Image (cartoon, rainbow over all chains, first blue to last red; front, side, top):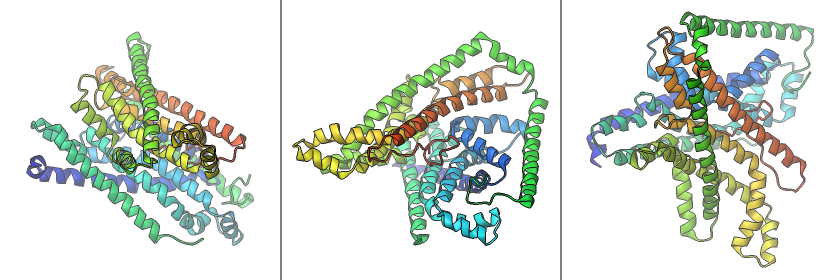
Length: 215
Length: 289
């Protein structure tokens, strides 16, 4: 108990670190994921191929390897001295985007064919069909898989802590260096993750109920 | 060419536009790749000497050792997690309230706590000398919980008439479970189970954090200790090790797809789950590590 109360600021910073890391990479993953899903169903073959390669590569690579790429290869390509926060967001966001892409794509598949056909017969272009007719309807089916993807993202953000980014997991490193019992620290860290995961799944359940539409 | 309902078979105008997009898109991608290659070669990462390191017996040995350790952890964790999954799934479906309550809370706990933390706690608390066991037990707990839910979904999906018929024959609950429900559940859920094994394989790389000498750890060691012209060979190492991981995972995914196709062929009335893999045809959503 003392560990938590005496170092409340440390735990608070770790909590905030995890939340902001998760939120930023969730936004990146959503934007990239929807874009790549659009590529994968588009009428332009090179873009389709790019989407397929993107998803296949990122989904079959361990996230830890992506973190290695972000922390050791990326600084050589762009410029050295990028903050560990940005690198963590990039690794998490890129990895998660491939899962978001597949969720969106299977959501697109559940929209009745007649909807897209009607849109086409009105003379809508591919982008219009997708943006105004198909994607809004796909949203509802995409919410549940998206929920589990976001929960996975929240948990995966712990890996950023192992790469010296300040967040919940890295809190224990600071405290155990000070000689506190590691097990006690981890009880609190694990509890914090439990709270986060339940918050995320609660948020998505709310979203699901709000977006419920009879089709 | 209208493989999708989202767009018509393109007419002359659309074809011209698509061609423009194709050219612009390819050009943008090529430019990006060229920029990356240019920056990396400016850093000397693409020099022949950099790639020469893979010609040394020592380097090859450590790759093989890392691969063996990864596969070792994966094999143990795979088998143990499946065993745990059967126990947890049956426990969760038990008629005895306390049993199902315990199984449910174990499943919920280990699914909600990041795997890295489970592994780290096991390492610091119990297996400081043997990181292999921390990795294996951590993976077993997490994947056992996940596979238990998969198995439970499979058991609940078996048509009700199956268990009713078995009970009518006078079988006990244990008999119904072991001889009727679980075999059918495993069969219909096999694609998903194998897909989850891909996640297990990928997650062995978390052993990297707790100094278990698996494939990724070997790579990291190699990249940070070898110096070629004053630079660490991160790019060659990442490319080679990434290729090994992708190849292993794709092989497992292919197995899942193959099982799914076989399952669809046999008409037993029990729906076979989609193989949720990252191969181009499958639009599934699984494999969330």
